[in-house]
Image: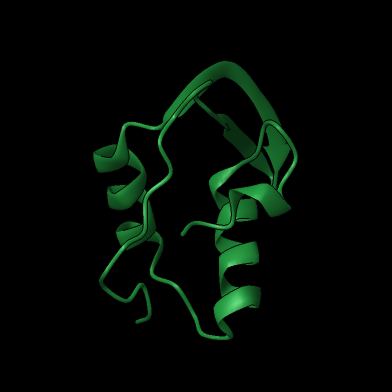
Length: 77
């Protein structure tokens, strides 16, 4: 299961990646993480962006009532 409950209500992909890597203790490929986010359809994409690492980062949130899912494949590189 994606560790979205360890994040604020609205979060960036970088924050999700960081928390995921901390929990599984392995690096995560950003491209794989993005693909899973897009395929899952459980996230809202906010129009709001925040400054992150010198550029603006899109904010995401969990859709109300979204069914959480377990991913069977590894995210590691």
